[in-house]
Image (cartoon, rainbow, N blue to C red; front, side, top):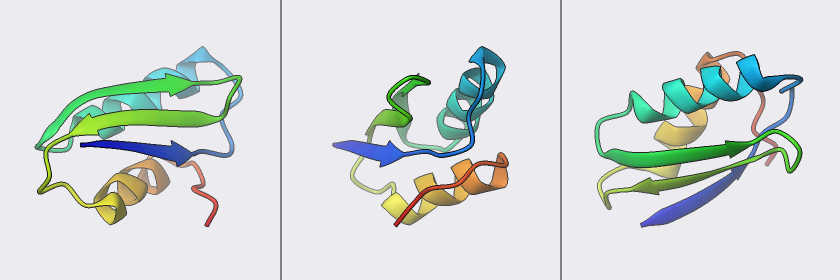
Length: 67
């Protein structure tokens, strides 16, 4: 399953790394590709991973996920 999240608040490659690590720490996430310029993350994950869990990881990492 693939989910794309919009992410606000990233300003540099360190932010990208931080968000990537937060998403990949979720059990069931296979791959997370975060794009600074596009302000988004493409997440490849198992069906049992909820979008809310992905959003929560980004928010906990200190960034915003617009509605």
